[in-house]
Image (cartoon, rainbow, N blue to C red; front, side, top):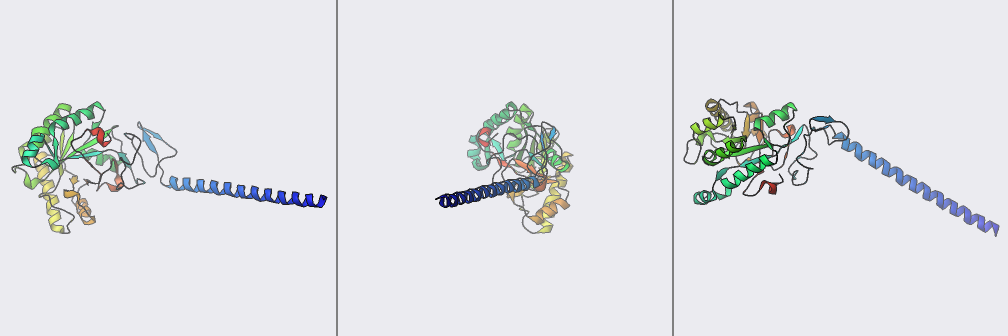
Length: 308
């Protein structure tokens, strides 16, 4: 009887030892997995800047971030945005408009699809002021990315594509009212046309200190087409015309139709363009994609609707 009990005791002890070893192995595996996961994360880590103070420790990669407008969410970092973010990055939303005019005029002109009601635009600019946003120039954003510099908290870049005459009639007085900086992508070959700004209006706005001009080609040509001579003409001609009329150094570019390719980017670099804006949505901007910076198209809704 004693031998039976002894054998049972030995069996229980063996099972206990096996269970202990199994638990030890699982614990060791979890520890190794945790360490490996964190080491992978740390490969993308760098320091994060909050309130102009550099904080060392855990962060998100080879990045320095200014204070986010809020905790990043899938809305603020949509699928097209490279993630994890690579390079020196800033959380600076860039918003995109085209026509700014009363809805009745937009309907009469058949321009509803690209038009923002001027009354709603006034509300949006008032909202930015009330919420403490600082509108900066497109060039200031690009300089900050390339120079790894800071920007004011809650910075935003306002862009208006094509250079329609209603920008002068309706948007410009509102910008003056709230003292907000904006950037206009001008198609220089269409300047003076029936629906477009005149050179006199462009010069007046550019000398106000509130409006900066951006290269949007000479004829709104899709520079993703591989006609190198044509692409060079479109970019160089528009840049020279804008600089001659405004005195501004125009080193920013807006892609017609949002289209680009490696050949187009190479030519832009050759022509002295320092940064370019796509139509890829997202609030984060990085020096790793300074030639395809992201923008949010704004419609007739409160800016709160867009996450501001």
